[in-house]
Amino acid sequence: MDNNNTVQDMFFRQLIDHSEDFILAMGLDGLITYSSPSFQKMLGLPSEELIERHGSSHVFEQDRERFLQSISQLIEDHKPFTLEYRYQLNDGTLLWVEGKACLIKDGGVPTGIGIISRDISPYKSVEEHLVRMAYYDALTGLPNRRLFHDRYNQSLLLAKRYQRKLAVFYLDLDDFKAINDNYGHAVGDELLQKVAARLLHCVRDPDTVSRLGGDEFVILLQQFEMPEDIDKVAHRVIQALSNRFVIGQHEISITCSMGAALYPQDGSGEDLIQSADNAMYQAKKHGKHYSEF
Image (tube, rainbow, N blue to C red; front, side, top):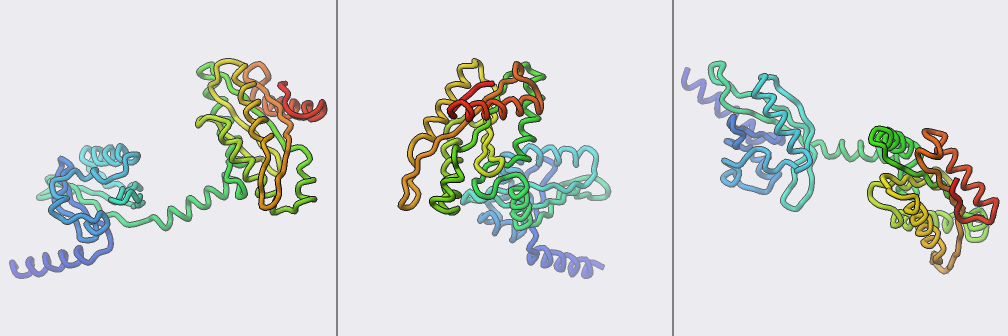
């Protein structure tokens, strides 16, 4: 019987040692008691440097709290869990894994935690690519119409709840068709890319610049204090786009027409967006550049 147990132990040890899955054992205090060769190879660390480290020490910072909460819940209710999270490797690379964890028991008494995880980075890359296709403009990399409306609706809810202000800018490039006609669509596409880059430099991190299609862009400004702040952004945009664009052998000058609408005074929901759109057409009708609804 003892010999059978020894053979069985050797079999399972060899199975673990040759597995491509990342296998980790931790005490109930979260400290590592065993790491498989594949886990050591992933982190680029020998076993002796991992023993007695906390099992979350190499989990990416933004995922660490979820990982620790799942471990605590496992100890509390004894129910295995499956969790997607990232390890941060020594070179800074992030590796997505799907980890499955359960309690290790001796005679029914929990003595530790076992985690088997596998690399799911290729699947995550495909997933992220599909998300970008669904929510981002392929030409400029800016949020598309769908993502803009998602962010706008979320921002509007927060503005209503916390009595904040927000503003929407609508803008398009004047006589953009002439650019395509005179220089070709390849130059026109590159011009749109450069316009997008300049617009991003005119706003803050919480704000959103989106391309709706063609030469039409929309900007969502959040949490500004004074109406004058809207004018400052508008003039930054006009100034940024008034500087010449150099594309290949061509130097191209453009202007834009832009309109703004402010929440709550100019409306809410689709009404606010329509107000900004109307203001843009008023600007185009009266000599272009900028108009506030």
